[in-house]
Image (cartoon, helix red, strand yellow):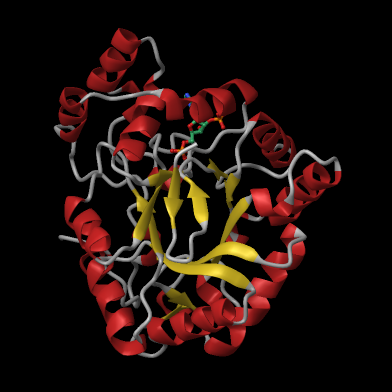
Length: 317
Ligand code: A2P
């Protein structure tokens, strides 16, 4: 499979398995089947509430001799209520315990949004801590320290615009190695891609299929990507599925992609998208679909008394 190369030579398989919205009770089987069929990259996060079950699946496939730990690329993410310098290591250790691992391949700051220590999801303005009080660079310093200690192999961010990344680099001198953001034909983020590529920052596209199973609060946002007429027609013409077109689109941009599925047929279909080749003309047709539509628009962080706004969160608004 095509990989993204890191400066020290480490290789991240370009297709990973997304696990956001994969329920406990389903995710063990999904991760096991995925690894059995050839997935080597699993994207996790503490907030998904399923790392223990994923850890058991990883443990069992290693024990059965299907893969070695070193064959796998495991990513996880630091939640918003653990941004204090002193909280980062504890949060990381909890993730490692749950995943039954002694290191992560990649650890990301999940959002440039800070919540009070005891808040999981905010319900009122006072649940937030402004970045002016707990700047992202404090969290980033702690994450880099985890990398320097070898507990994580690579360090990065998620949901960050170029201004936030520039600030991290300016203050700490350390460049995030990857930025994971929502990305698909309806949200192509050309300026952010150009910025990250100019700094050798890899990108991972989340919600590459449009996350139709996203929580109800996001449901009204945008048309259904998998039903897009151009995507559906292109898939039919090529004898592949719409999901495979969407995954191949990211790969052709050299962007890693983490489609989520808990269904064995769709898991296999998504992995097979690595064989789908798109011509320049087909890529051009897909480039024409950009509508700057976010399915995960960050509105959950916006309420009276919160300092987080779409303007300070996202690129190019
Ligand atoms: P399921 O888990 O039942 O397969 P995203 O990766 O953008 O978050 O999208 C995940 C959603 O897309 C889930 O509802 C998932 O359902 C569905 N899905 C995953 N793979 C495919 C596929 N190949 N074709 C259609 N839907 C898919």
